[in-house]
Length: 367
Ligand SMILES: [Mn+2]
Image (cartoon, rainbow, N blue to C red; front, side, top):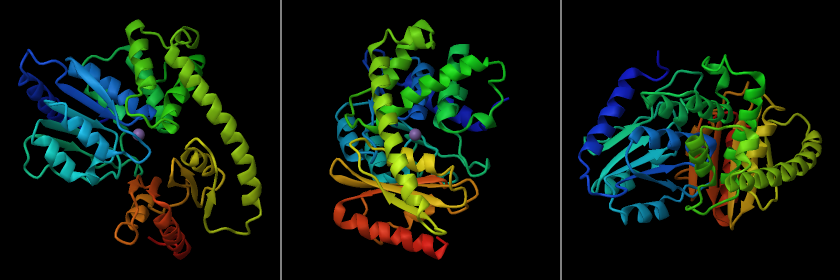
């Protein structure tokens, strides 16, 4: 039994295998995997690297705003036979895909905006997958797809999948992990937290601490905390994690006391100040306290403005549609996401227009 449609898996395998078969044996590193730096993206990249069974490089797309301009320049200069994009909203960049596919083959697995499937317009060199999903509007994480793609799956890989699904709030949908001991689950969740955190404060596209850690752990097939501490990557990730947790704690204390003063709020939009990009993490945490509301947290970070929106579990507003409604109204730099979690970024002069527009949408109670 597979979670993913077996035909999608077969089509993906056929596309990837036939592309790799075309690569001349002499070529070094002809394949590149561009991934999102969160745990889902890192774990998916690890699975794809394993599936490809050929020499491949990893490329970390600078987030939070997915710097595709820089990525395109970097990738175009590498003369690649195959570029795999994992876990990122590439649907917003059809021109980039077209240009890249004029030089090589492009495979994309995205799970943002589930249901949005743009075919590759007859372009045989592009395989675009953003499958329609009917799991309460939640689309299949990239790591689950990568795991399903593997023909042989080990216990170690199942643990990697567990970590990715934990950070995507997907564990309760999958019965694969029933045999895991409670202690083992606790350890994996702890490691997952460290893998997931690093993309919140780094913006250097050459940094792969999280993915490097997974690759190194895979060589020794270990996912125990004590053993991982021997890797410098784990120590770096742990430091980042602790820094973020401490900062988050203080910000939440202040925010909660501010929010308590609101009388029957229709939505919550609040600002934070931090050197780390914590607005998404904080919005995600606050949504559990306000199940009927949309929570938006914004901050200035590295010279730009970022707003992350999350909805509580009983709120039905489609945040991705709402953010997409900004396009054409204000000059945002990036915007998009899932129905339950979306974000936008803008330069200062346009950010406040966009924020005002979001508040107008939310006050009207419709998108
Ligand atoms: Mn992701």
